[in-house]
Image (cartoon, rainbow, N blue to C red; front, side, top):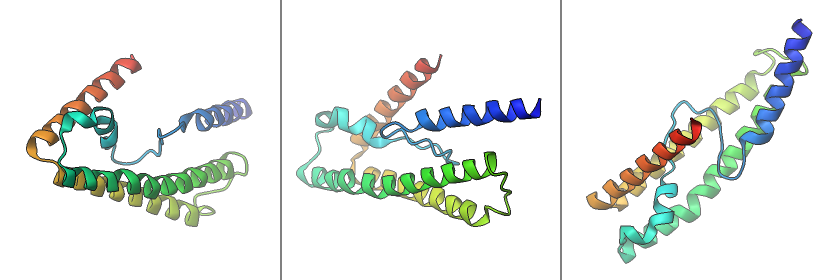
Length: 150
């Protein structure tokens, strides 16, 4: 029975890994679940009526942050896969994986820090009306996401 349970769990984890990470939908199991502001900003960009100065600052964020974050996401995903295989296939213990687990923890913290910094930069660029608009769009996205789950 234990062998069957382990086999089912291994297959389930494999399929989860295969389908969990499509495009920008990184699923890193972060402690914090923070909104993705560009999903609210980019489709509605014109509605924000950014000044030229705001637009220039937003373009810097849009060009720089994905590169920084995705590199960390990719490294963390690869590390999670290595850890998963080491545990499920090879029977490695936490002690065996200490360095990898520490690096994964560090990466997740770095990703979260970058995310928070980005949210704060965007907030500092926007005026109160624009920030309120972004928050409303984010709330709409959250409602749509909740409706798709049901």
